Amino acid sequence: MTRRARVELLVLVLAAATLAGAGCGRNDATTILTPTGIRPAPATWPGSMTGKVFYDPVNTPDLSVPPFPPTRVELYLGADLVATDSLDGSSRTYLFDNLAPGSYSIVVRSLVFYANSRGGLPVREGPLDAGNITLTLNPLALSNNVYVTGSMPGLGADQLIYGTGICDANQLGIWTYPNSLWPAVDIPAGTYRFKFVTDESSTDTNLIGWGGNPSDTLDVPFSDRPAVRGAGPSTDIVARFPASGTYAFTFDERRQRFSIALLPPGPAARSRRLP
Image (cartoon, rainbow, N blue to C red; front, top):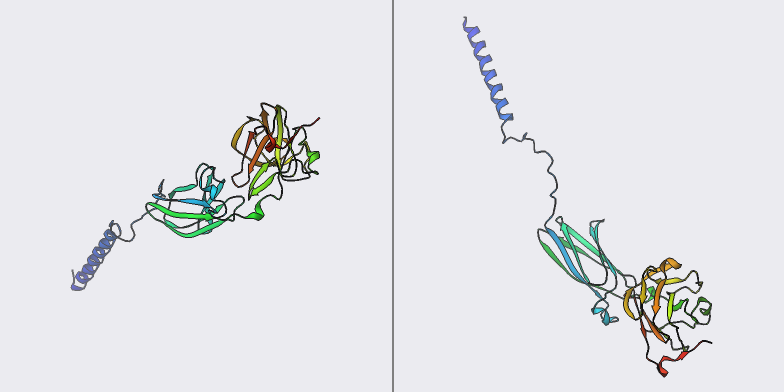
């Protein structure tokens, strides 16, 4: 073999060795070419958030005890609504769990209150106490007038024009009957359908206002039953009055609850008996 041939052979051997070494490097688990794949999100996150809602302690101090007004708490991550907590009135504490780390905000809403919000709530790996948030009563959201109207004699829809069943509002958002304008109607024993009517265009077959579940006949007396807004028989209240007499009706529009009780006989009842 000539000298030139030996040199060319040496060059080929060295080149092959270099290529072999590079191939081993690409297969090393520590190189940047190691595939990582897509990591799945965890089934649960360790973050959570809790806080309390307060209802206008200045104007509605009685709302410091249950039942509280029904309330919706909305949780946002950026502009995205990620969860809601609906408080039914038994509690004013909201709770969100299984939260991914991030900066959250909340919006709190209740029917006759101004909505309130809070942002910049940092959720990390653990619980966050978001503190208290207060709602202020919005008087413009309350009904203008409320009437006890239904199938009870003397309290039908034909009486709306006279205001016979109109309720007093001696406290914002709390409506009571008998009223201070008319003598109370004496209600005979029996079962009746009615609503706390808020729309004077109501008819006997289409009462518009605050009612309940007509499939649930309520035995008087009772207190703090949940009210729902609606029109027509599908949302009428059905109540069984055990004895003839003058009854006190109370509708709390803030709590969305109503009560009925028998008044004791006497001048305070201001009753009038129908012929």
